[in-house]
Length: 306
Ligand SMILES: C[S@@+](CC[C@H](N)C(=O)[O-])C[C@H]1O[C@@H](n2cnc3c(N)ncnc32)[C@H](O)[C@@H]1O
Image 1 (cartoon, rainbow, N blue to C red):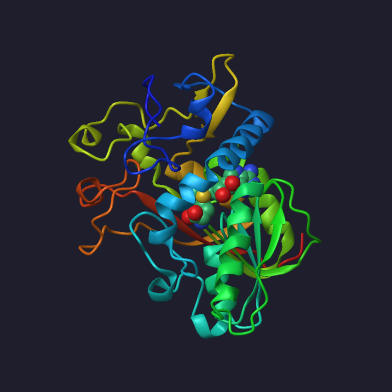
Image 2: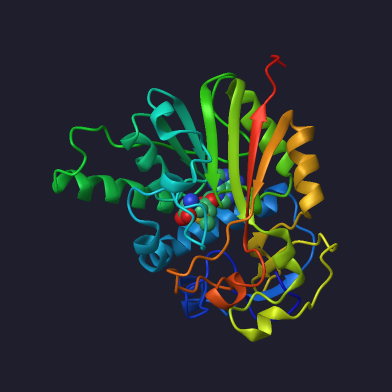
């Protein structure tokens, strides 16, 4: 998210600042830049990056996320307390789509509330971790007779579901920051939701794009234009994108959800809590106490069928 030539502390980065180690073992280190990246290039880069880095990502962040908790971002905002999806006792029996689910931690929490979640992700290796967690849980007798989470491997911009299949859709940093055309993704979510259903998603707070993506004091001075929407791209020696994140300003995000047919009900900016001492890439207690790191958009689908 910064104009520099070392990969930055982006979403998939480990606490020690390393990223894409698997990639680096058999190729030169990717370089970071800001340049355009379209739908296909972004999708291909995301699938490759998350497949190569799923093991390390889950090893690094799995403990913080928990196997069956619903954590909205590095601040640790927990759905069990936040209630952004609505009261937990009303989730029972709902068909819920988790978009960009990773190892399906959130979907597992939803299942524990009695919902019927479907966990969708582009990365086979991320979904393999979902299966591993379910299998470990089962071996411990922890699922109490629950079925493993339903997993679907697909791109969030082309959802393989019939119109009106879900009562609720959610995403904790999944897919939305990685796609070139977020309106296309939102329209797909709108299509598969039933009238009046909610769509709640979290992304990096747009203001972060003006600062170097560093957890320390160097991450506190504005270094780039907040208004520059040029994507953050890590590319290999041939100039092929291996990691892409797309920036939208706060106003862009509002316009995107409205263009897709949603009403924005709330925009939550979680504050950094005292108990959280962990760093996650560029997210840290230091920066979290001064500037927002996550934005959670709470949206409702219009009631009329489209
Ligand atoms: C930061 S993880 C978030 C997952 C989970 N909530 C977590 O906190 O670990 C981002 C996830 O989005 C997925 N993803 C990226 N682009 C996607 C796309 N176009 N369609 C579906 N999933 C995508 C990645 O594979 C990855 O599992």
